[in-house]
Length: 202
Image (tube, rainbow, N blue to C red; front, side, top):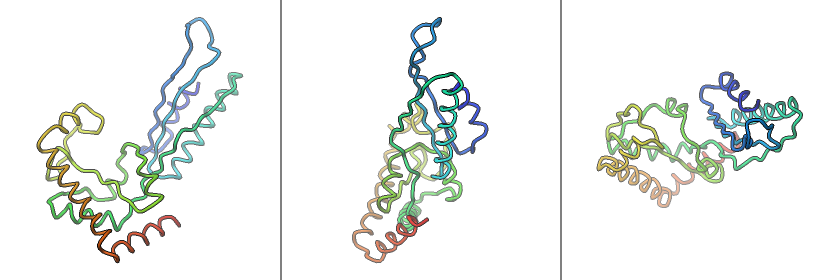
């Protein structure tokens, strides 16, 4: 019931939300109601308030399913990955370096609503100023290849190319120069810190 209800929740949630479930123990025999069943559910959202709402909805499904079937339920919550708290000062400086190298970006409004994988870098950006830039390994001029996404066979193929190597070196230079500015430019570092403090209040 939990698995099916979560499946139905997908059409009632934001298009940017993601929910993934798998039954890890569904019993040992088809003609016996299992004494114990278990499943793992992962969920993600672009905003923290959306993540909290999604968690509460899933928890309500789990508890309602248990009540409806006369079962007890135990929920174990694993580490929570916070959304990225991107520092505008650092991001703009990194972006200016990458643009000077010939990189073309989508508008920030487009990139910020594009679903992406989860990372603990979000947690880091709530502890100190940070950025988590992504870059194109299949094109040096920003052209996106259809079907190319991380954790795919196509990505693995592209990652082994000379073009991908050049792209990685270019992104590393952008990060290195931004980091160097943090070390050498006190005004820049202060601006990044002030952005971070403002973001914590919001």
